Image (spheres, rainbow, N blue to C red):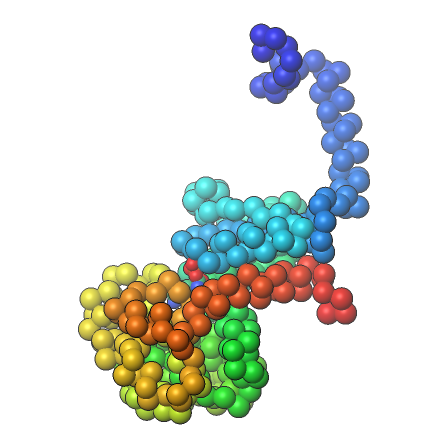
Length: 312
Ligand code: CP
Ligand code: NVA
């Protein structure tokens, strides 16, 4: 530097040995005090959440980022291809290394096996931010939203209409956990994996499968749908559109549920495909409360994962 005001650290040969030794001594001191150090305020003060996105996201990404900050912690946004993960570093090694730096990891990755492997090798909590198999954070927000609008979901009837995907799988698991009836209508070609269904049924879930949207929504307290083409399914777009056309949630279908039924959708929505704008923007739709509740539900998830909920 011409003015000498800023110290560059460009090469060891550019820094006097005494300065290098000073740096190393400070590093040793900082390491020894790190565990007790607290930054900021709030229950997650001083904590860092690494967020790895192998797939795009609006809600998950922003709600985790803002949620972590609101709890006093800090988010660290990463994408797979910016990391050595994208050049073949293994998931176990990535997990081991991240665990030395951060307090928790949230990941969105299509392969559920990869998520499980990351969780196995990480020594910090790992959060599923959506895989091809499930989307549990979405369901925490969805249950919260249902109960906010209509009281306890136990014993109620929820109808899922459309594709069978990750979000449906989490709805099936939720039906078991929260004790409501789930009626699922999909085209026969896109029916849920029976092994998964039977597993959840044998845990006690009341899940009805059908190919008729009208049958599934009868007397329903809530109608749910999701996109016809999930991430990773892009090649099947044309086929899926054809198969799913009869499963659109529109005013006519809403009219076959209970008159006070609510409409839910995890978003992003494809207006005119799985749902009409009339339903999305209509009085029964709670989709934007549902999106907002991602933030609140995940703050709960983060606090729980990091032991910041008293007596949990
Ligand atoms: N619902 C949901 O997970 O949205 P994003 O893909 O925008 O995160
Ligand atoms: N089922 C959708 C959910 C998006 C939040 C997908 O996997 O793309």
